[in-house]
Image (cartoon, rainbow, N blue to C red):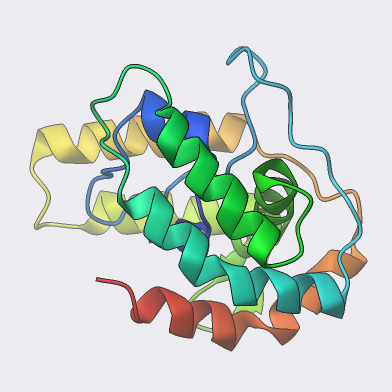
Length: 185
C-alpha cells in the first residue's frame, strides 16, 4: 500500500467514497483530479517545523477521521468542528491548513519505494504497483482488473512536485511516518 495511506485523507474525499482499496492497490493522494470539482492541491515548500507540527497533529486528526461514517451523504458539522479543534490544538489555523500540508507530504510519499525507502518518483512507484498487482496470484481476476484500472488512472494524473526540496525533508522523517502508520489498527 502506498505511504500516502498513512496521511489523513481530505474530509470531502473521505465522505464521498469508501476508503477501501484492493489488496496491493495504492490510495490516492488528497490532491483532486481535474474533473472532480475540487481545486487542485496548492503546493508549498515544506520545512522541518511544518513536518514536526504535522507529525504531532497526525494522531488526533486520524482519530477524528477514523470516526467518520463513510456512508454519510454530507459532512457532519460535529465532525467538522472536531477536525477544526484538533488542527487548532496543534497550531494550525484550521483543518484546511493541516490538510494542505498532508497533501504536500503525500505527494512525496507517493513516489517512495517502500522496500528500499528511497524516492523514485510517483510514476515509477505506480509502475511498480501495477507490476505487483499483475503478478499477484492471490487476487481474483475482478479484483486485479479493478486495481489495475485504478492504478492506471492514477498514472494518467500524476502531479509533479513543484518544490524538489520537499523530497529531502519528507524523506528525513520517513521512518516516523511509517511508525505512525504501523501503530494504527
